[in-house]
Amino acid sequence: MKRIYLDHNSTTPIRPEVIKIAEPFITNFYGNPSSVHSFGRETREAIENSRIKIASTINASDPNEIFFTSGGTESDNLAIRGVFNNQESKSHIITTQIEHNAVLDTCNHLSSERSLEVTYIKPDKDGLVSSKRIKDAVKKNTKLISVILGNNEIGTIQPISEISTFCKNLGILFHTDAVQAVGKMKIDVQKDNIDLLSGSGHKINAPKGIGFLYARKNTPLNAILTGGGQEQNIRSGTENVAGIVALGEACKILDTEGNELWGNVLKLRDRLENEICEKIPDVEIIGHKTQRLPGTSNIAFSNAEGETLLIRLDLEGIAVSTGAACSSGSTEPSHVLLSMDLPQNLVRGSLRFSLGWGSTDEDIDYLMDKLPSAVKKVREIAPKN
Ligand SMILES: Cc1ncc(COP(=O)(O)O)c(C=O)c1O
Image 1: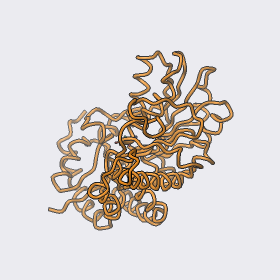
Image 2: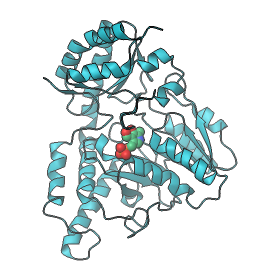
Image 3: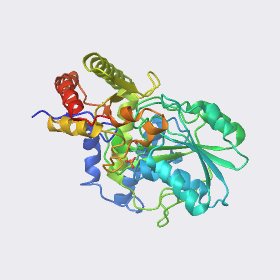
């Protein structure tokens, strides 16, 4: 049976060039980068080269503004907890209802553990959060605003430069979870006035378990892990050298090949959406039509159970997802779709197709060969209400 992977927002395959450059740091170059001897110096050099590559991808002014972490979840935690670690309670944070749980749950925890006040801004029906709504929610004690850049479920891209500009004028820190956006769109932390930005390797063809936090120089940030004082005392723990080298290379590749790659992915996604809308009745594309990550397509099949459809497609060798696949196999309706006030019928029948490096026209041919009949069958057995 053919196997077709249309779940790149969940995770991605590692590119061979990335494996090639990282492998020696699993085998031959094993020195601890904190060691003074030559074994340590060679891994230290590799880390610093990678820091330069990542800084260049997001146009950070100084590579030392990049802090390596274990992934997007830790970067989000470090950004938010790190700002509030030594804060008096009663500080206020504004975020959105469509964040990944790495941000939402961190804010929830801080609100219950530390009496932090949190405002969750609702998006519109396209999943766009208006900068005006955010501005209207600002209070005297607002310390941080955190807004996801490209949404993992629907792909909608938020107007972050509008938000970060008023943050700068009001002296409020601005964080963006860019885990789905890094390498897929132009990001300029200087031009866009971003203070804190989270990224993750496994969304861009590097391995799992490596990520980074960009923190603009002089951003007041406290460590959330204590120990050996690595990463300028912000993130203790011996560095994941192979992962760091891989992440740097993945960013470098996207800096040069990204335009062409995402242009092709966008064409494939448009083809997928056009054919689904043509061949299957009662479907709706969810998310913003144009302000959207190139590989993301969230489609609601009314009167069908998304979970059942996912399993049917899996039996045909096709991998897609419902809701956020990274929330540990959750079958709860997606908090993102619910916040957009979509009818239950659409929320229940939604599937996320996400394309990326390695996706081909043959993948779409195969999908379109199997999907219409799968939807028909799933609709026949769906509970009528
Ligand atoms: C938007 C977003 N933020 C954070 C994360 C968590 O990243 P990681 O899996 O690297 O911890 C994900 C993962 O799906 C994500 O999509």
